Length: 143
Figure 1 (tube, rainbow, N blue to C red):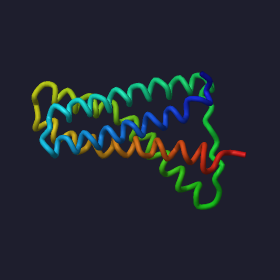
Figure 2 (figure 1 turned 60 degrees about the horizontal axis):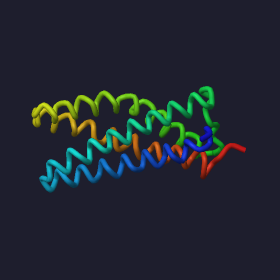
Figure 3 (figure 1 turned 45 degrees about the vertical axis):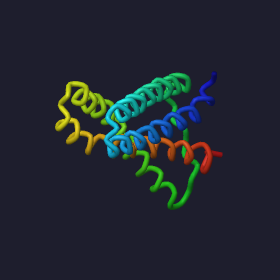
Figure 4 (figure 1 turned 90 degrees about the horizontal axis):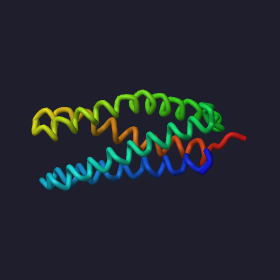
């Protein structure tokens, strides 16, 4: 496996995490608590695998970032998305861990309150992670 193999894998992992998050929300809305727990646990696991692959990619490319090849209005659109993605991605692991700990400890009201913050941030990070991949590698690759 080379560094070039990892970005599409990372995008697929982000997409999978986003789908699992959505399925987890549907499950809890249907009061399928066990399914909800399994789906959210799977989303967390997939996100952890993503993080391992992302760090591996950064090690293999020695921290060099991939240049954005877009021009005009696409540049500020991309960079606003990227900056918000990075800032919020830093928040996801502690938010997800604390949210899950509340559920596992049976503190469902605290879990519910925090999940209203955690879910939209985690979902946004998953979706924008896929978009960053498409912006960098498919739609506007550097020349």
